[in-house]
Length: 380
Image (cartoon, rainbow, N blue to C red; front, side):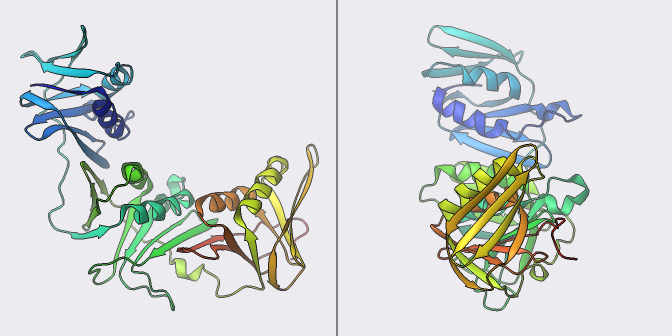
């Protein structure tokens, strides 16, 4: 095996697949990156048995072949190489010689025949999606995924395709995530034949890698294939395949309130900045911040005895019952505001024991539900 390529292409490829490599597995072989030299370039692969990824980079291949290289070693080397052409040559004994300028490094490689092959989904349904739309859908839901291993089914994002069962919902693709304290749902209408309803719970880790893969953007479409136990994503020269989470995702439709007592239209930037300032004080008291609507003003108040107090006031447009006060974990509010890329948001409240609703005034089909916090002042 012998080839040459640019350091920048090599670095980008190694950096992409290196994130997939497992560092805590009892199977040492998956701590490596598979390098395969073919006529079409160099294919780099990583597989942690839950998620697999392939990236192809351009190269001048003199001799085809394959070799495994420890991910930690090659990652450290490539990140420190100068910006120049890099040559790889594998000896008969498996030693990988990495040459650049007048210097070289030798790294001991391993035979590739025991490396687990990335599965290609043959029986599944394939969809073409605008990468910008899909990336946005991930960004607006993934932060609400549960990190608790006790709620394994909530460690992923529910992906639904097909007609929605909610009245007035025209979307044909939806993503939903919840950790039990909040819920984020994003819908979109995409072109093409979607067919009957398809539901899959995609691990958050897999979607994070898909989001990174789509950062380059471009005019290419994302190809997504869903089978009963696996899902794959193909974009440009990158391929990701992941196992699906098996289980019953909660019926999120039961969580979304049918109405609210008061609707507050606010400038997103102003509300986010006020939330982050109040959060400094609230960090010493379980992140509790009280939201109160009074006429055309929204008050965000926090009080931590050993730290201080805050009363942030922003101008808003309010319709409904004035004087409504609800306490929230301000971190959960800020997370949603950071995910919305619009100028105005709608905050809906219905009393101290009812969940709050955040959605953009204009823009995509997005709704965020956050549960209130009961305080000593909350009526029984």
